[in-house]
Image 1 (cartoon, helix red, strand yellow):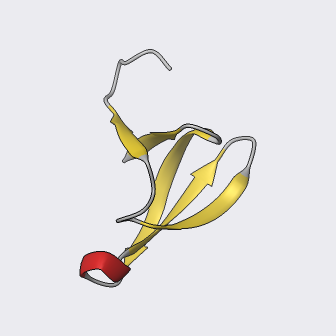
Image 2 (cartoon, one colour; image 1 turned 90 degrees about the horizontal axis):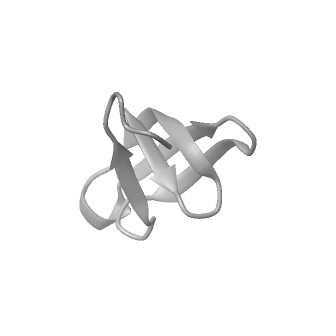
Length: 53
């Protein structure tokens, strides 16, 4: 799944672990590399196929 982040741009979720408020997502961004976020705190938007970004 691809997501958009305000600071890092578009990235692909490569791993998700944990449950609930402690769920972590590992995202690979083209320019920023690999980043890990708490899913409950990260401001991510799903990027749908064919959508301009």
